[in-house]
Length: 475
Ligand SMILES: Nc1ncnc2c1ncn2[C@@H]1O[C@H](COP(=O)(O)OP(=O)(O)OP(=O)(O)O)[C@@H](O)[C@H]1O
Ligand SMILES: [Mg+2]
Image (cartoon, rainbow, N blue to C red; front, side, top):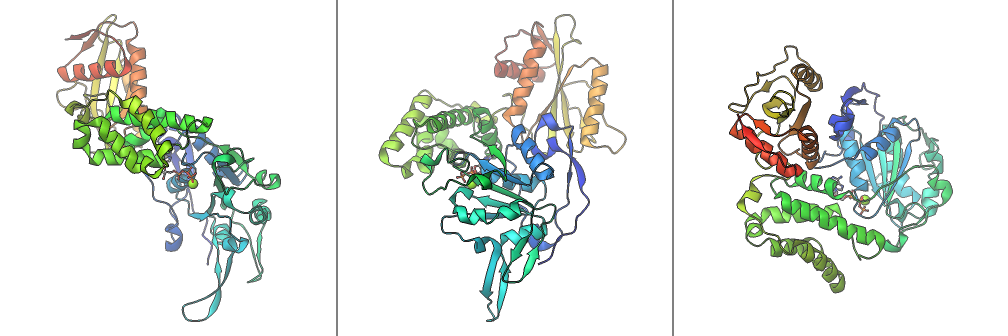
């Protein structure tokens, strides 16, 4: 076993790392991937459909930075995304992760390691995840930490105080690397508050709990859930994604209040969306029964009959009148219906709203073609706008290119520069921002002058998506 060298970090935009526009301007030092193969293998694989929230990133960054505390405890109801949050956070930051599943019968030596007989008959000490993570500067995730017997987690206290670990079997005193972090997750982890739902969980002792930074999480909002589903299963009609998200939200709220017997966590909604997507034709023809079939397949057929009936009843009430047309299958959720979906996921479409250039009380909408993610080229799409392509001369970052572009556009009187990403990473968040800005821009500005039929279609879609009534005039 060997330690890792502290490598130079690269400053990366937090907004880019976690897909959050609000922190695009903040930079964070990300280390390179570990060079040692067995440690590199511990860096989780990024899930492109993963949605982070600002609150999560803020807390995780503080914890990862290590200055305010190196141990974090994440509580929250089942399937709200506790373990995957850490996994995906580590994936983005190239952090090796040891994920240890705690259970009632575990011993402290499951964490520290034990003497083992090797295949060749010799004996040797096999290090457990705790000393390895301490030496390698990795993250140790104590998953389902509430399942662990308190005497086992109590033995961790010295390590949680940044102290060393003594291994009696080898006589070694393991010193923690400055990058070593501990995170524990659990359903009833702090104060046993949700323990009624989770048999087999333990109430941890307060001396142990207070050694951790605390983070109580819960299920994602319906909007966030829809963004996850859209990213995970692009191409599923927006209506269907919206209904799944709303339904999940309703059942989860009932679960948290005690009126619903089980929740519908994201691991279930993602599977459900995937089932519906693979059965798109059947969904188009009989959406109500297909949605019910999907729910049974991914969840309710495994529940006791009265629980299944209650949950299926809730869904039936919500989707009672659902019908789908071919049109619904043409676009993904969140993209205003007629913005053409682009094949190349690295291309982006920039929608510009200019309330000043169309004359008094008018707003003109321009669609500025696409730009690649490096920001080196912005190409105007043919036929949509006469805007001159903007191509920065120097080799600059995408963010700097966007800033330069915005400055240039501001000089020309464009007030909103919306960056609507297309391809697998489109979220309804981006579209919501686009529609919000659109609503703001058109407030009081009537009629809207549009420069081409393509732009008219986009503006109509934006109007529809934002519930804004405006008169469109072609000129
Ligand atoms: N923010 C998210 N974005 C995308 N997918 C998510 C998100 N949160 C959860 N998921 C999906 O839900 C699955 C289950 O989440 P996870 O295992 O993290 O929940 P948990 O809170 O640890 O559950 P449990 O309490 O049962 O251990 C993940 O593997 C992932 O597919
Ligand atoms: Mg978990």
